[in-house]
Image (cartoon, rainbow, N blue to C red; front, side, top):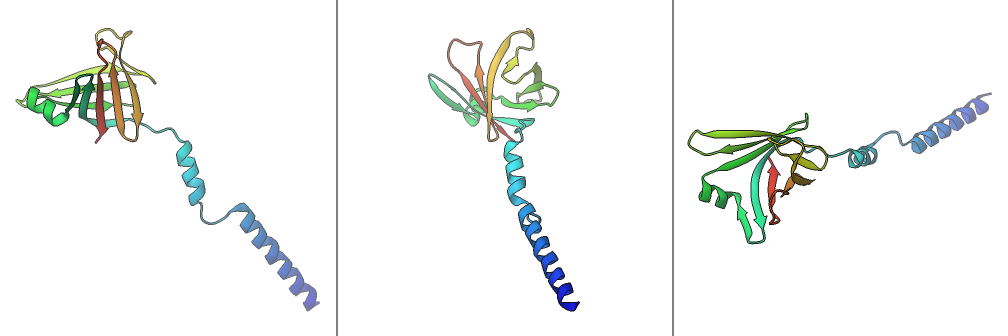
Length: 143
């Protein structure tokens, strides 16, 4: 009787160990990594102006501020609006609210007209100005 009880206990332990190994109980690092890769990356947040590039070259944010005295920031909200803020450094601040969708940012005065197309990748938001004949790209980095 003791022999069959020991055999039955060993058999149960082997089955339990097999199920434990097959189901992957324990460390879920691989699963959580795979889930994060499949989740859409949100670009909601605040961005600082980094540079502007056109066919004549690139102007950095520091050069832009030196030339114009203006510091630009951008805030993307989850209600499909973005707010562009111009800080003139003398206490004067102007903000403009624009609507956006999955491809374009629209003109604040003419909401049916796309002003910019955009691409978001690794915390960098690149805006292509659609209103100019010269290809102009503004780059903003997540704060």
